[in-house]
Image (cartoon, rainbow over the protein chains, first blue to last red):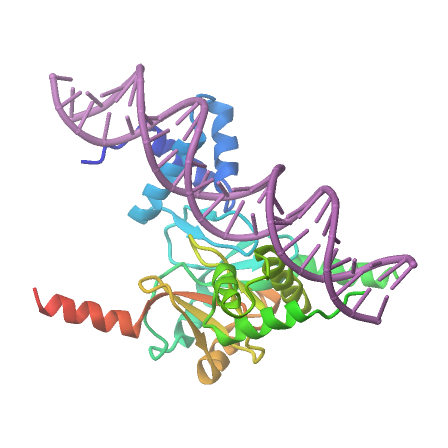
Length: 133
Length: 133
DNA sequence: CTCTCTGCAAATTATTTGCATGATA
DNA sequence: TATCATGCAAATAATTTGCAGAGAG
């Protein structure tokens, strides 16, 4: 039987407090309040939480995996420039869902779509930079 | 000036011959015909080809990166059960593109959407297995 | 008291890098 | 012949595992 531990609760709460963190960011944050927790405990509990469906694991190109503690169905957008992950909610989520053909797959897991490109914020930055040339 | 090398051509061709391979699969395949090529040469040239846009890098959860040598715009579907990657073409590609709101992002890079779930093939298998119980 | 979980250190996997040598413009 | 690329081995980064002891049921 699997026990519910203090450490797992802390890991879960910390992932939810941060913005799509990787395992090391979670560890660093936890260290501030509980300096005795080990990195492998963070990894072990993250894996258990993902297995239980309490966290979502996001694979991003060329980086450590990120985690998401949000439980409401949504998708993700990864900005190639700032490497931030944005949640795709509501209208956009519904539109994408409607477009997914049942031919392709039997079942698309909620949450797990990852789009990739340049976010509005970074785009405006690059346009502004170009004007200065 | 970057030179065009024999090895880079071999790496490119080999990725195209295989079905969304990881770097090691590409290396193993190349070894059969060119046993003197080094693994780091495979990695180095894969990275150059990705940078040039000749290959696409796909990050999948809990595994080594996969590569795709197809240049026509398309998206991807990763089956959580068999861990195969399927290309999403034509009709489905157009429908997904139409659903992507400009609110979310300035520009979604072609090719880079990764859906995740259970493919038709694995779904039928699991239904058949359930009938036998 | 038993058995799971933890923290640490060592192991593993995927990928990158330093360097002496080989190949190409 | 000056550079750039290669192959090898060592280095690095992310993650997992083995194990002795702590803690919960």
